[in-house]
Length: 157
Image 1 (cartoon, rainbow, N blue to C red):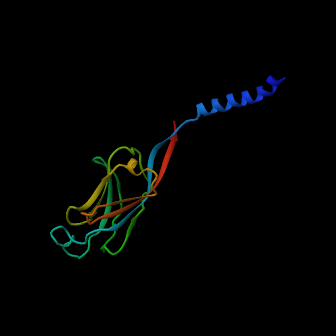
Image 2: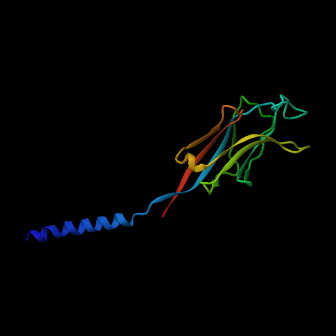
Image 3: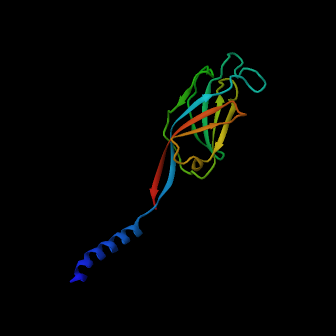
């Protein structure tokens, strides 16, 4: 009789163990960038000149690259001043589909009469920031600060 009472418990234990062994692990699929915010930038070049010849302030847009491949270009803001914060979310979300690879975020001064000027940027690997809702990119030696607002998407394997 005692064996009959143990049988349901034994079956339940076997069922639980088999379910646990079938459980699949979640792995990072991509980083979903919903917004890029330019928090700070230098209003002048390294030489102390204005970015634009005819105006005092740069017309700033953002580019995102995976390696050398361009994956995002934002529209530009006209006459940007560094005491303001500029948000870029048109064309978002941007999916960084290779989170173990190096991406770069850079700002440029848009010029209608000449080549756009590189103002600076940062390289990063999304996986190094996994789980962070805001990826902050800045340096003590650089006069640029970015914040990327991110969601993390996982798949079961």
